[in-house]
Length: 118
Image (cartoon, rainbow, N blue to C red; front, side):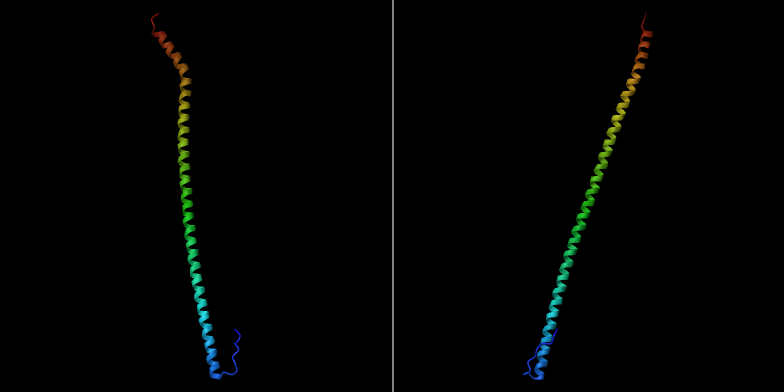
């Protein structure tokens, strides 16, 4: 900061007092500026922290939602697998019955013939 222009008509003591007063005002202004910057920094940090917490909460909710959807998908897949297993079992049962019905029917007819009086 350039030295301010001090009038020559002031005594040396008055010039010194004036310089001291200007220096005091400059220190006060600097202190106010530092306080303002510190307060601004605190507010910025508080906003950053709040945003970070919101982001963390959203991420947790997203992870929880993904886990829930994965569990639902697993449950559906298991249920589908059970239905397929049941359908396969029923199909195999009917296939076995269909294959076994012809020979069994023939055996029953033969047994019936043997039992009938002639």
